Length: 260
Image 1: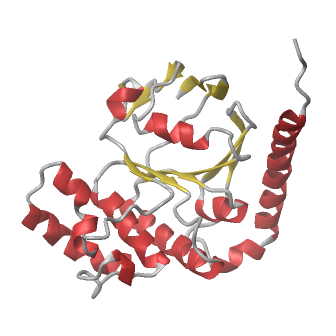
Image 2 (image 1 turned 180 degrees about the horizontal axis):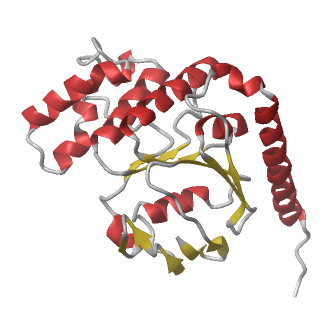
């Protein structure tokens, strides 16, 4: 991605954003509220066109943002499960939209259920599932839509702390098996460090990349890594950068308007 800018009305969401992601890399994205993280995802997913700049190369080929529509799997913040579909039928929704035979799609989903901790729940409906299990169904649907790049927009943000920690470890296990490329938005710095190969800190609006922090912690990540001196050092660096940008955003919001 090169020199991406996007404006909505009088608000500039992104300005001059530059970013590269390597195949198989797990990149987490943090930053102040309103810094354009979700706008970035919408552009990468092909849902929005940038006003300037764009996606120079994707999977080794030149392309425009609109050409990425359908070539990227995207899980938004909410699970968006359909209440009238059971676990399997929710998981195969993207495959059905693509035209896959229903019987074949269901067979693929049934084989994948144990890996996602959903064995025995295939006939359950969303209202019968916990929040963590609903997120597993949504992630399974995202994985079944077989695309090399996955965009995950705060998928664990609504979960309690214990469930969230369990989901993080489970996601890493699944990622290490399938080795998809992942861009992951979060507001949780611990989560960003624990999951990522790299953490990107975005500036206050208009959004751009303020800091690219490599995470050199060993994989597979053990739960106790969060108490290690290296983890705490990384967390301090990231928090200082985020706080600096958050204060800019706060001062900008509080600045008095000058009458003409």
